Image (cartoon, rainbow, N blue to C red; front, side):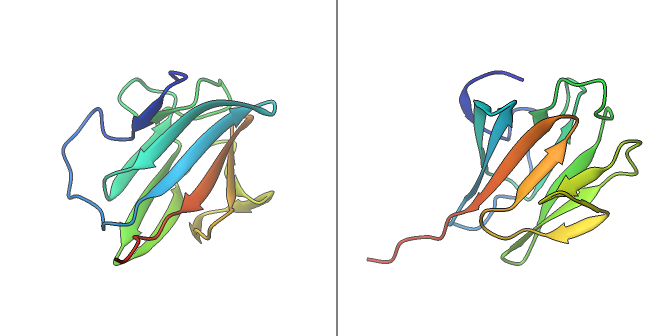
Length: 120
């Protein structure tokens, strides 16, 4: 995983998301290592190079989990990973994300922040 702020869109073209964007801040052992703006409707998480958010851990599957959007709601889906996907310390299969949720995969924490568009 590269320690830079970036869109989670480097590997594919997909349907754009709503105007208000959500973010994922990735931390390892309490240290922030990357921040991603979720700029498309499907974001792949795992240790393969083709993942939008790379989690460089042997405990993470190649394609471990996916964040996807339905209407205006974001969800995280475990992709039948061996070691599981956790949200707020609870193992999940599918979970509707809320502002402040923390997704844990292979020793990495991915903090979800939902941003809403400002109205002028």
